[in-house]
Image: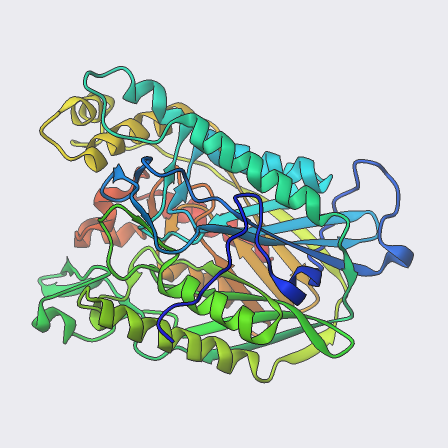
Length: 466
């Protein structure tokens, strides 16, 4: 099977057959805005939603910012609404590269309003494909201040996608079904992930990206990764209703052309949904320094192998979930305070010069604009959150965190089941360890945070999982 095929029926939704009946129980201790008990007898109920958030043809798309010409796969927003009594919560994964600042807020607000719940009880994460939009409406005033401006999607494109997502969630509110068990499982993923930071001697590191044509670099060890793909399954009467998958790797094979694609992780996700009939959602974990470069030379044949191997891991993880009653559902939040870099190359003047330099690629110039937008919002911390269902915990983190933070999160509940998703509000860019700044490599160059942010980030994770 070369691709996972999806039948498109319009921008507002998709035909999903039996899976449209699937519904999920993600519950927090939030109160209904109506104050009326919604789940009969306090039972856990779940609703699922999916919609097409592909931007219009001609829209400048990441990473090349060339006008979108081809939709290889529709970009989907998929998620679950979990309800228990008066409490309701939402988990959503979007096939976009990133959502930042007010655009991230707009997506959460659209979901919260449609689900009749608090914004604090909505977690929206991007899957982070690089054949997908980068959304930051706050960068637009800076982009428009230079002539000629770099190519970037209009804010109307972001607003339309958020509205489409809100409509999909609203439409799901009449399709709740009860769930009576939750299953946990995992499987090792073979030959997909590898650490991007490869040692080059004297305490320094080089870079092995999502694709790598240098055979000597590909031959280097995998390095630090989390090899396990984890699955959380919501069950009704012994049958899977919805599965949530979590794995830490940059999810792209080849990119930089004017093409929209949900890439190999989306291909595996949609194939499994078609085969099982159960609704499938995929979340990318802390993959800031993890990608497929060791096993990917950037060819379509290499992508086919990545797709087949991650699909095999998903299927293996689904084979034998350990079931427990759905009970003890709570929701926790913590604040991650943001810092601002002032070292050479990261000052406000540096960002303005980068944005205005017409000799630089559009991706670099828009990066300068997003850096300026980040400066404006940095006084406001990022809210992080976690869902707890008995001995099952899901942490929702911002930015592009290094895999060390995912492993740290799991250590907080070492005897329990902890899944982690990154790529919430991506305003700060990479969230690196402090030592990474001394080691060099790519990731620290793409972070807007100071090295001392590591302590604050670890503390926020501790609070979520305490």
